[in-house]
Image (tube, rainbow, N blue to C red):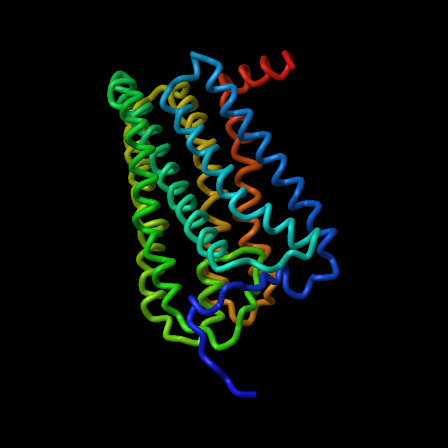
Length: 312
């Protein structure tokens, strides 16, 4: 059979495989996907509702938590509804516009999420190391600017991705072995030179993971340095409690993300369904656990949530 080249503009639709190798189990796989998605939405919308209603929670920490909740909602919503359509209705076709929209939206929100986690680390540093200046440094205007800069950073860094993907040639292959249009999954089906895409992907990974983690590590180094100068065990315990929730959320985001990136780029011998499941763990699990972690570790938020639940 003759091989022929197609540019992305010539290919109006792609086929999303879902979970390759587990097609017969789609209905069963959809159950945890659906449950995690709904629980994540309910938990994050509850955080947004409670913080918006309670004036005492209009503090930098909780405003940043609202930003985190918004990014969690948008991350899962950019992927899971289409995934459920694949599992339930076998709607595997996605248009060119839909695929590129998903790439831009998913990637932008993911990078914004990382920036919010960085801002939350800075919030903990100011709260512990400069408590008297906390509300001055992290005013409502400052929090708004942090949110805007986080979003702009995500847009600016991710906007070139569809431009790089649209230039790739596809040799008659429209089959994407995934549940959604990940940039790397789309690039893998191309028969063209991926040097430019891989180079830019390395730049994004360096900024999104490397730089952000370095700055977060620096924040915690400064926190630990200041705590070592304080002899009060009560102050130590309070500082640890305020940081534990953020550290847990940080690990929930970066560990699945790192595993997904490493397996996608270097795990050629790993079964395709493992790549897909790891990528979806990154989308599904943090939105479910983040509100629970902050609800358990933050007494003020927990009490307010309990009060509103009892009213329902």
